Every structure is written in C-alpha cells, then in structure tokens.
Length: 111
Image 1 (tube, rainbow, N blue to C red):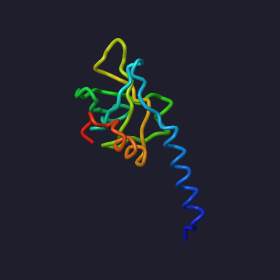
Image 2: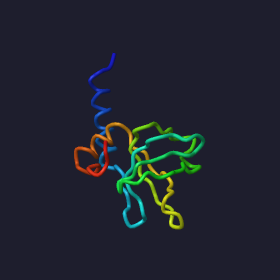
Image 3: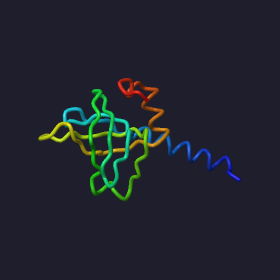
Image 4: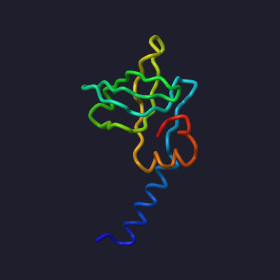
C-alpha cells in the first residue's frame, strides 16, 4: 500500500525533474524529434521538427542505459558533414513529454 508521504515524495521528485528539463541547443544544431522506427543495433529513424526523416544513431554512452521505443520524443544533434544523419543526445520520459506539450515546445511535431 502506498502512503501519502510516498506520493508526495514522488510528486516532489517529478517537479524537480521538470525544473531541470533539457531543451535543444539550437546554435549547436540540436532539435526535437520523434522516433518512428527502430532499425536494429544502434540505428533509429527519427521524424524531426523540420519535417525531414533522418537516420540517427544512439551513441555509445546512451546505448546500454537508454532504451528507445516508437513515438518517444528525443533531442537529436545533426552531423556537421552530413546533415541527413544525426546522433540522439536525449530521450524524454512520459511526464516530461506532457510538460513540453503543455508549454508549446512540441508544436512543430505531430505528437
């Protein structure tokens, strides 16, 4: 049975995570995207804010720690030398995605 104190602690933790929520650094070539298809291994197709679908990869430091699913909201960083490919740098969890929707960050995405 869940106590009232545990519920309050969980809500406080979520509020703290919302204060620390990461947004894309536009001047570094980052943008929001939605995972559309997992290609196997570290390859994923992502529908980006600008309307393009890009092949993205999960870098080594995220590979074993973060599991991607279809319809996940992510931040990608475009490659400088090949802009039709990118790296995934961040994945949002459920309540963070809802917060981004409410505040209008995901207006350009078909979420």
